Structure formats: structure tokens, C-alpha cells
Image 1 (cartoon, protein in one colour):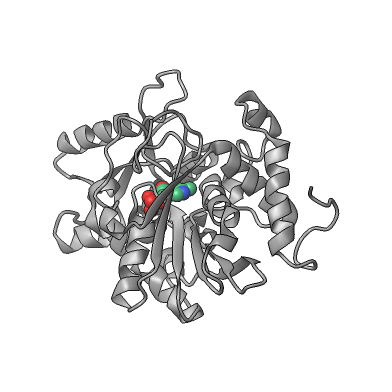
Image 2 (cartoon, rainbow, N blue to C red; image 1 turned 180 degrees about the vertical axis):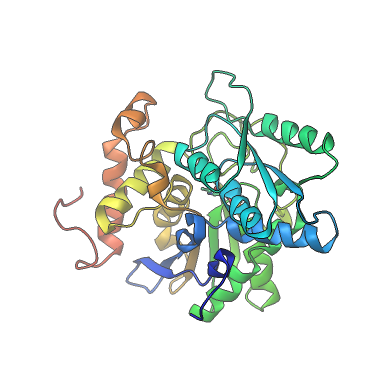
Amino acid sequence: MPLVTRVTDLIGRTPLFELAATTTGTRLLLKLEPFNPTGAAKIRMAREMVLDAERRGLLTSGGHIIESTSGNTGLGLAVVAAERGYRFTAVVDHHACKDKLRAMRAMGAELVFVADDGDDNLATSAREDLAEAMAAARPDAYFTEQHNNDTNAVGYYAVAEELLEDVERVDILLSSVGTGGSLFGTATRLRQLGCPAYVIGVEPVGSIAFGGEGGPYWQSGTGTPPGATIGTAVDYSLLDEGVKVSDVAAFATARAVAKELGLMIGGSAGGSVHAALSRLEEFPAGSTIVTIVCDGGEKYLDTVFDDDWMRERDLLDPAAEDDVRAMLHRYVPAGRRSELAEAR
Ligand SMILES: Cc1ncc(COP(=O)(O)O)c(C=O)c1O
């Protein structure tokens, strides 16, 4: 790695980690995006959106960036804004992880909270409406509008390029869908590079991008809650399958992976890993499956990894964790995982 002079020079070249493999040579690989600055994938698209706005003359020196964020996009924009001399306002809600909010503030971002409606529903559409109204009222402000910004997906082209530097091919790309930028941006570039992977999107039960009934869910950053608009980055023409994972299964997976392997992944990645592990042997023998781990478990110590928080919401399910641990025992050789407590 050459000497770097900007924090954003540290984006990318994240490690690829083999989580699991079957005896028939099918393997599940994790693209570990927590190794980016801010500990998340979203800084890739945050930089891309700002550079694009500069190129188009929409942001000029001393300008003001506004975005609605569940946290990780805001962290990325806070870095880019600090580095390039912009003011940044993040429109957030009470669901955001406290540490993400504190870190945004530490980097000079201003936080504006949408009104707390007192229930457990995500406030995505209220956030977006407020961000849009704030930007409209300020002539120097630019609303990056991640849900409807074409450069969101372009920000992940490098993920595909990095993957093909590390492995010969990706047969199945299986990952969570919030704005859709990370999954569909990576899938688009894989295709352009001659590697048309089978694309499986994962969203929480209660999210509406793949149909079905909407409802509340706790997986952070991912999915489209009822009432929110599905962003233009969700490219259904590239989607081969959309699957849903419950909060219980997603969080049990993040917790089991931490206990078994010492690898801390966030709740949305827990959902994708659960979807992949549960059907690993259904995929054609020898398949290479890749999941993008958007962020790390360290961001969820007060939630997913806190037994009281989990219990209060009826999400703690030792049997579900045991099921995941059993899958990990099946697919991860001894010597790479915990052997202290044999799973069922
Ligand atoms: C933790 C987490 N997982 C998944 C996603 C979904 O990524 P995308 O918006 O690229 O679909 C996000 C997006 O904010 C996120 O913060």
C-alpha cells in the first residue's frame, strides 16, 4: 500500500474471507467491507456521489451536503465532507445506532432528527421528506438522495473489480438490499467484466422491495419499510431471486458467527449469511457464493449483541443460534472455529 494522503484513499481493497465450504467445493465468501474507513461499505458510494455532484457543478467550494441516513451513508459523507471542505447535515431517526451518530458528530456533521413517532417503525420516508425540504429551502445545499442517485451503484463497481482480482469467478452474488446500490452496482460491473453472477437479494421480513406484507423490523440500514419508496438502484432486471430473512434469524446468525469464529458482522450481513448457509448444499457443486458484509458487529454492541435489548424485543432465540452454530460446525473445519461448545 503506497503512502496515502486522504482518508478516502483508504477505501477499498477489502479482504475476502472464506466463511464456509461444503465437501463438494461450494464455498461462501464474505467481502469484508468493515475494513473500509467508517467500518462500512457505504463510504464507497458516499465518495462517488460527492465527486459526481462536483463534476456536474452541483456542489462547489464551501457547499452544503444534506442526506437522509440510517448511519453508514452519513458516516461516509461526514468523512468526504470534512476532507473536501463541505458542511454536512445528516437527517436521522431514533433507530440509528448511537455510535454512528456520535461518530458523525465527531467528524463535524450536524444531525437533524425527524420527530420520534414513539413506535418501532423505521422513519425512512419521514427522513427523506425532511432532507428534501431542507435542501429545497437552502440555495447552497445539495441533497445527495442516495435512494435515487445513479452514482450510488457506480460506487460499488470497484467491489466487482476487487472480487475478480481475488477469485476467478463469482457464481452467486447474495447480499442485502437497502437502496440496492451495493448488490446491483456489484452485479452490473461483474456482468460488464464477463462474469454474469446469479443475483439473490436479501431483505428483512417486513420490508417491501420483494413483495409481501410490510411491517416493522430491526435490521439496520437494509430493506424498504412500508411507506418508503423503493429506490432506483433496485434493479429488478438483474435480480434472479429476492428472499426474506427474519430479525431473529439474522441476529442469531451474527451472534453465532461471532461466537464460533470471532468474526463480528452486523445484523444485515447476518441475514445474508443465514440465507446463504441455509441452502449452501442446494447450490450447484463447486459454486462460489459471495456476500457483501456491509458493516461490522462492533456497531451493534448495544443492540444485536446485547441480551437485554434482544430479550425486550423478543428477538433472543438460543435455539435459532444453535441452528446456525450447527451449520457452521458442518461447513467450517475444526481448527478454524470454536470447539468449546458443540452445537446441537
Ligand atoms: C448495515 C447495512 N446493511 C445493508 C445496507 C444496504 O446496502 P444498500 O443500500 O447498498 O442496498 C446498508 C445501507 O445503508 C447498511 O447500512
